[in-house]
Length: 141
Image (cartoon, rainbow, N blue to C red; front, side, top):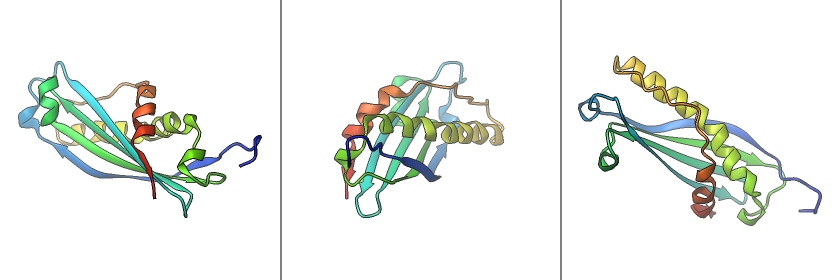
């Protein structure tokens, strides 16, 4: 990649591939703990990136081992000028999460509403702290 050429990427698609809602474990819902896990796979041949974002909510920190609500979203990104995982710029990791989170947020709200449970409306969150874990949990295939 040339010095002045910026890597370009776009969100191609996403899908919620796994979710769970166990209202028996929810407690009164007044105070919850949430957790996010990230990982990614860069596909060299296709110049694509698969982001995996896992969300968990529990009534307390210990409950995160068995959350009352969890969801896993996969987001698929396509690169134009990136040939290896080493070429992925740092800003991609935080931006990819920021682009994916609204879909997950909407799904969690809809799921809790349709279950006729207490609405779990996640606030807009700054998830930039997930950038380094995502970068560290990215592999190249």
